[in-house]
Image: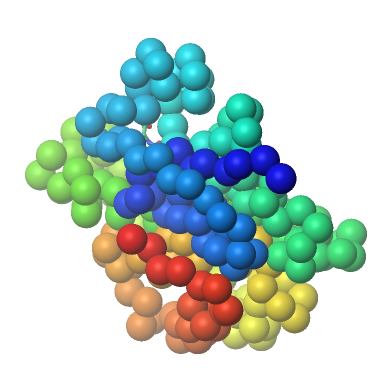
Length: 204
Ligand SMILES: N[C@@H](CCC(=O)N[C@@H](CS)C(=O)NCC(=O)O)C(=O)O
């Protein structure tokens, strides 16, 4: 098996998804850190050698580089119970992972990043104008999750899949972006189920 290295900033939920997937599967993962606040993923070396898109996470597999958190999780979990065997369930899992990238992460994760790491006072005019829309978008995504989880223990089928890992990463820290978990009791119960999985590791 080829060596695995995660190029990451440990504050990023997208990076944590990959670390959590590897931990749940018992797969060893080396870690190489970058400070995104200092532009360390925008250097010519990073752009040419790791990811032309200038972002972490990137999973290095031997000498090959795989950006995009959900693609990296898929690579690690191929053939494991974290990816359902049934074709419809597998596609449904992807549905939630696309939802995470389109409806959840751009709102929930971005507000956390702006408020916790950049600081509201340091936001530019464009970012300040976006806060209300991001809050509404994040609340809408959490409402969709809450409705689903009120009727199901997991996003797909009867056990944890990559859909749960992808959505857990920024949901469990969403209060740092001003969202209120206590308004979402089914999400809270699901968060406890995920953190109770054998092999679970917390975010740094
Ligand atoms: N869709 C990508 C998003 C990657 C992303 O936005 N990474 C952020 C940190 S979470 C980043 O590297 N930001 C630094 C920058 O844009 O310079 C994924 O899921 O991996």
